Image (cartoon, rainbow, N blue to C red; front, side, top):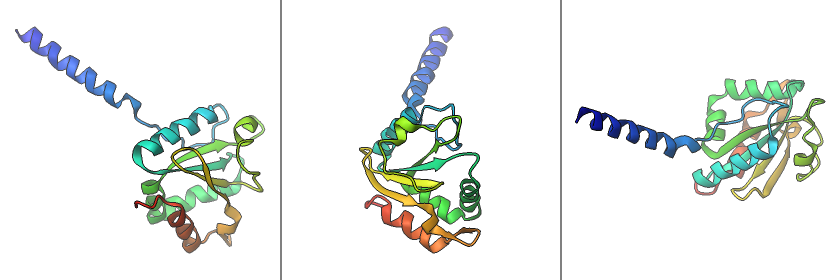
Amino acid sequence: MKMIGCMVVVLALVGCRQVSSHDYVPVSKYDPRRDADKDIKDAITEAHRTGKRVLLEVGGEWCKWCHIMDRYFQDHPQLAGLRDRNYITVKINFSEENLNEKVLSRYPKIPGYPHIFILDTDGKVLQSQNTGELEEGQGYNLDKFTAFLTHWAPQAN
């Protein structure tokens, strides 16, 4: 009888894990080995499930301003919270190792890096944002960045 009880518990745990096996894993690093097309599709699926929008950050490990933007979000938790509550963020690599030309050809021309695209839950581009417009000195302008993220956030939030 104990054996049957153990089997029921094991099967229940396995079943629970299968239900959550679709857990979305954020793409938080520029990696030339990643499949950007799959990453974007996964983010769109997650955005559809959660009601969030997709924020694509195009750049690379070589990009000084990409690292400055990462640090800016770390140093401004309220801005990171606004982003995380409203967006599924995906880093798309652009480097000599992988230009991701096929994927990026579906989006408007990028004038500089990092560059942000905001997508809706169907993958439609809502905004192509030159992050240079959000810069101030050797960093970013908190009011401008907050206004940008707030403006493009889903209307329900």
